[in-house]
Amino acid sequence: MNRRDLFRSTLLGGGLLALRSTAEGQAVTPGQVADSRVHPHEKPPDLTSPDWKPVFFDAHQNETLIALSDRILPETNTPGAKAAQANRFLDLVLSAEEPGTQREFLSGLSYIDGESQSRYRQPFVDLPMELQDELIAFLAFERGPGRWTGEGPEEFAGHRHFENLKGWISWAFYSSEIGMRALGWNGNMIAGEFTGCPHPSAEHGREQ
Image (tube, rainbow, N blue to C red; front, top):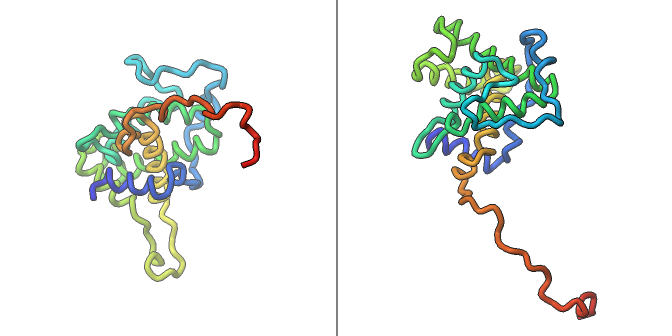
């Protein structure tokens, strides 16, 4: 089973929203969260525009998210999260989210970038794909002496952050047209024309 099929089965089995973690975030750049929220009456940006720019992420965060999403849901025989522009959808959604949720997401990106700098002396976006996958594999599993014994497991912050980001990215991808087609949607918007009840109105309410 490849990575795409694994996420697909997880989403179908547990529901799209179930992947969104409730992990507790860390501190991020002061002021970014407070100034980023889109007013509900503003016209939403065109996410497909070649002139699109993020309203929530800064440029480096956006590039990090693109790189991460491309390794979590890469292009296979069908387009991946990068082609689905999951980063743009998440930028829009998170711009209207609560500050705590925003901080949590940004803390996750910051953690992964910091871990990349610590291990490889490079930001995540500049790593070759092999090292990006190596770091993801490290973060994808829980750590701690109690994982197998059940005695006092130590929470692994990297795993918590990764699971949260993975959940958001997967949700964004499978909410897109590309992602829905990967789940089997054929493009039909409605099942057919609804013509109403075929019985004459005089028969409505009549006892059988």
